[in-house]
Image (cartoon, rainbow, N blue to C red):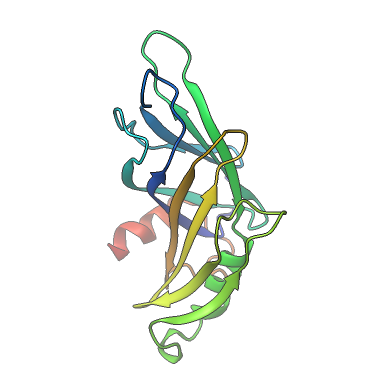
Length: 184
């Protein structure tokens, strides 16, 4: 099994102003892919501003990978329609986890560790902040969907102190899942 550097929790919060693919609405769901891992939310019926509020967890084996996000309209009698896509890099978040979990008592809650500006090279709709909140590294991201006429998806990435990348350099996925169970 590949060495796991840590776990990345991505909370898919909500969609905003998603495209219509059914008669007057859509039944949207989100698919997140990182490397060979693929996770998805449940579909929300007839809603262009769905609230998923679902947490999906990836095992990080390569901190240079991007997370690809795709939004689909769930259809019963035909292939699901695409409602756009986006992606975001995890490297800035994983670097913050690596640096700031070594001496967490020295970092006051609410400290902004890094700001990431939207640009032509990323899908961010607005500035994203990586923040230290109550012993956790948290990143809030709003992604503008591509290859569609409209739509945004709001996400939150999080990690906690057990994600010490130096200590877990040789951990396997089984070790990391055990750490998650023990920390809950």
